[in-house]
Length: 479
Image: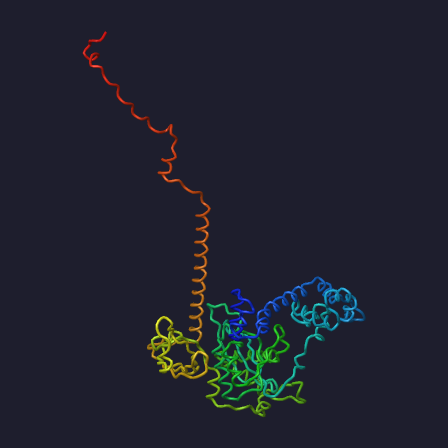
């Protein structure tokens, strides 16, 4: 977001009028008004849209869509046009004036309640008709140089492995695979827990070195494949990324190839001592065996067909620069700290002599680190407008941890931090409850207050003055 727009929203939140904001920042009043009211407009539009999608009329539309009857061995259902005609008056009363608008809104409702049209069709059709309404894999478009990346799971001798594979769609050739063994002490159910973003980045670097750059890469929406370092690297190399729709495995041709690959693995795991060797043998056999693909008139061997594809070549340095780690750090005492590693960096002269006194702050820099060389950092200014120099590693006795151990250590630190944060929140809540109880308790009376409030009758009797004695009575001279 533009800095000026952020400043406008901050001033408006403090109660400054639109006219005064425009005068202070030198921005046209119409622009300030548009910036201020656009979030409100979007929020109102979202509420209106949610209310429309939750309207009871869509329940009736879904009931009509699911209404079916078998005639002559086929399932007959109502068309969208027929449903619109039946409910046209009520739909127009809700602002849906045309069948085109009705279809667009219906798409949103189907996506929200079923996930896709295909899932709805499978609910309202007979089982023997499912094949007609599933999108066939062989009909997917295939272009030269398109790569597809996905993962699958395999169990070998009681141990679970995740396989992250890359396959060229047009030739059907498996280019390479990366294997991760699931540790027994972790309940890893998805491959984005078994592989880190750095593992995937190194895997892609090795593929680009060997083959070149693909025309595009097709992946699903797993978090590890959408990490910043992956997206930034592919964008730097000008490689488009196509994300398949969630819960739509038919969009991925690699799924069918995984089944063939696992059929081969069931044999090779009995003839090889390790899973990695068995997988390599299965991939080699798959690539050399002729397959009948629909887009080829005769059976073809993926390895032979793939050898005819020419890829765009780039230098190794450019590939490594694209997949560098990026950190934002503060320089303190000529030192930059990244993951307990200390790098020495002396700022240029013009950067060191800035503000002094109370207004001085430690400079913030952006650092880039090569995946294959952690001893050097390329340092840029905070806005990445100019390079500031190179920082060198000065830490000694750095523990050599494997990627899995390092990842587990980081996850443990994150769990501890979350636990600390939760305990701090609970402590604050307990203190607030304690303060409320103090205010609610009746006021107690001190001992001195009790003494001052005692009844007069309870006061001790005052001593009476003694009666004067008559000396005559004492001598016995009285009558």
